[in-house]
Length: 312
Image (tube, rainbow, N blue to C red; front, top):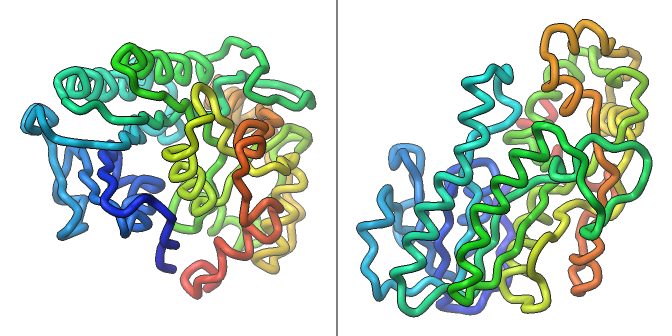
């Protein structure tokens, strides 16, 4: 389905790192009234066409280039492979390395951007139990926390340049084209979907178009700076999530994915991503006046899965 038009000041100029990804492409498509430059390693993946400009090297930008908003979404996916030592190092370094290049670019730009929106994740809070977590909650150490902390720290230097920094701690992003839903569609269609372990761990989620709208909101809402939880206001347990997904697909949910074999095979990846979670609440987004169009999971899944492609 087409991306929703999001309200941005006409003529505003955006630099989007990672604009060819699952969230970034949707954001670029929705920025119809803005001038958008996409930073990507692979121009062949872009396919936007005018008026979107695609660059591979920030040093090629002139020093008097004006950007009102910088959005950093680029980075190695954390869930796309085993956490070997080599892969852990790549994951830890990927977002900061891009951020360092953007920081160097911002330092030579005049005028400076007004705001930098930096992608982090709810993994910053670590693996947690039932306690509700808002932006003032303390973290617990784990690999996911260290990845998010490194990503957030890398953006902080631009604050000395007068740039407002928003650390967007993003939950599970729901849309059929990628992320969690794309991975679950086939097994659930085959009637093989089920909860992970006892299903008691929490899943903090956000529908993708709500995330795009929240990014646009944070770009113009001057009260938002520092951590902002990008999650719907109604997190659910894993059991509740798989039941809702089964209802959306009209498929039975009888299976249970056992914990022990996956933890044995995948180690921390399974412990943190498959059987761990956080009950995260978007306190700062709500306090700033942002309104979620899809605050409840059932309606978010219906919206995400209305395409004939998703339901076939």
